[in-house]
Length: 358
Image: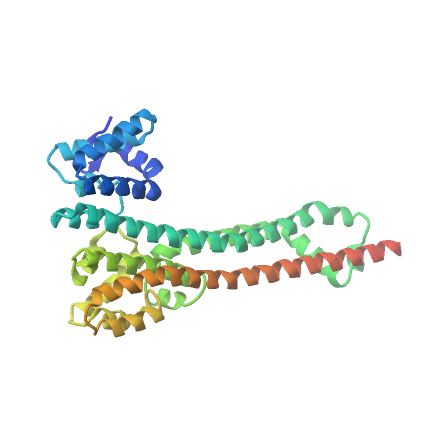
């Protein structure tokens, strides 16, 4: 049963939201509400219909819709009811639609932001999946040789007589099978985890330098493209740029993005236009190309419309740029695979030659 607390939905409802009310489901929900309201149906009536369909399908979504209806029944608005169930950007856009009497339009803008986020995230996962699999395959093959193949070969060959590629493969295998190799593997895994954890948390001048290098540059572009799209969408809803930036510095966002927005806001408060504030912040966020374009557009009439067009374009261009970054990683992974295969092949030939001489 839906429970309302002073801090928003109960933990059970929040958990159901994370498990069953994800971005794709919310997009479908906002679309249904938007269509039904355009056809004259009241919001509460639309939600009750969604709740009934969920009950019929025995879906946990029925509890989520029941919670939203319960909040609305207490005289609150939809944006308040969605606290803890949707992103802050969605809630703000839906709230803007409510404030202007254009809830269907607010729902449409919320769908645009969600779709942009999903597009970027899917492209990143798809682009990096191949290189990651190739790297793990290399590690797996080396470990297999070190643990299962090389010990058997050393029963036949004297390690002191090995030369060339056979010697190199034996050295690598001996290291991987040793305690030092295990520690190195643990250290490599820890470094990988730390890199991932640093994406949303690491701040400061050193991070500005790291943002120019892989893999942090991919994160900067991914977050920055969605950020620009969110700003353009909220500007379309009638929000002032300074208001948007201020809300982002106080919202539940990452320390990384909060620092960047704070730097941009500092310059914006001094009367600089959006493009100039982006440039003078020194962050090159979301990218140098976007900053240069926004500097030009910020001085032209209809800046909000032009920024929305640029954001739409960069959802596509950003995906392509992410793919280019991923291609560099993939090229490095391919070289590693090729080098490994060459080493194993040459070492195998060397062992066979020496075996023939035994």
